[in-house]
Length: 480
Ligand code: NAD
Image (cartoon, rainbow, N blue to C red; front, top):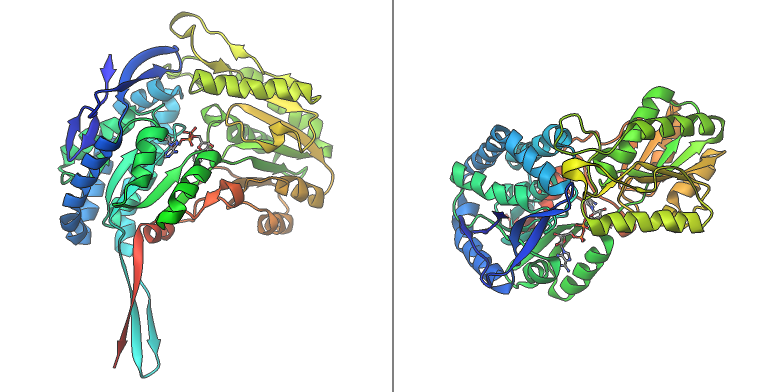
């Protein structure tokens, strides 16, 4: 049995109440470990350690802080196989995906912010012949970072790296559903000699330890990635406390596919955008709008690819589709299939749990599912499902495609597939999402603003946006 501990003040510690939660391997449906069910007392210990570490950490020369981040990145790279395997067991994602995307990108997060902190400049405003203003951007202090289960180490470090780079000390909480690689990050911090208390990692539920982190008076900012409902709860909790708050929430991402796209490459990329990580990426396309002249051909091409993508044991190197993260989540996705049927939707492929044999016979597998014939206001087109389920609809004009895409409470990411540059730029300007990809998906430059509008969140991550979030600006006006 794999028993995880909290990482507080540079050391692994059992939870104060000695209570644990089961950790289940999605591919087998079996409990394979336990994680701390932490609470207020553990948060108190972590905050005390972080406060103690803060003065020395924020006073370090930038180069020294950057050296620590670089060393963490190198250690993640050195342990890539071990971390990728742990991620695949914990989350159900194909080990090849963890090895090629999740873990390398976690290392990149630390590398990127090791450099970004030295490039982060503050402004100066001269008042002609009279005075000069300059802006100090100082660490916020002790900050909380809370992340979801879909890209466990990748999203966890996407918050921790800028927070540390900006000179803060961190209380971080991974999802209780996928705690393993976050727990391993503590060992990495020990190995590189990160000063004690600079990064503290607590495990447990949102209701207990998550809320306790958010509510603690000494935690001055919260960077949260997760569901929109949770984000709303946290926003409500924190509003009277005036804490800095960054919310990266759900999405219902449209893909606009035009008849003049490069057909084969678009099919490949849109398919990947729909089903990578079993469709459990906040940026995955889930509503496909296809221009009518290519609708049938594109649909058949997608169905053929879905047929070929069979879920399999995520630990096999050849596996391209793994397990859904939990039984509860699988049931949630399946409930949308039933809803689609009730609304007159046609299930073109998938829609049922897949039973594997052997080691994975009790695992949570679902075939790539494609549904057509639903109205745009159907639940499957409006609510985030966050699984391997997409809907497809034809459209006739650019305006219609735009209206369908914008008919959503969410606003995270959109993709546009066309060779008409004018159309692409027009749509990009008018689509209500924080991220637009044209003829590509998930191509990431870490300097760019990352996040969504409307129900997809508040604030942006990435590059200077993250460095600004994790600092307080202070204007100094000097008269001369
Ligand atoms: P979730 O909201 O259930 O949980 C996210 C994290 O918040 C977990 O660590 C959880 O323990 C914690 N939490 C839950 N309730 C809390 C509370 N009241 N106070 C403090 N912490 C609390 O989300 P999830 O199911 O883990 O993740 C899936 C969701 O995350 C999807 O909606 C997906 O779109 C979203 N997501 C968004 C992005 C983005 O960048 N916008 C990226 C990845 C995932």
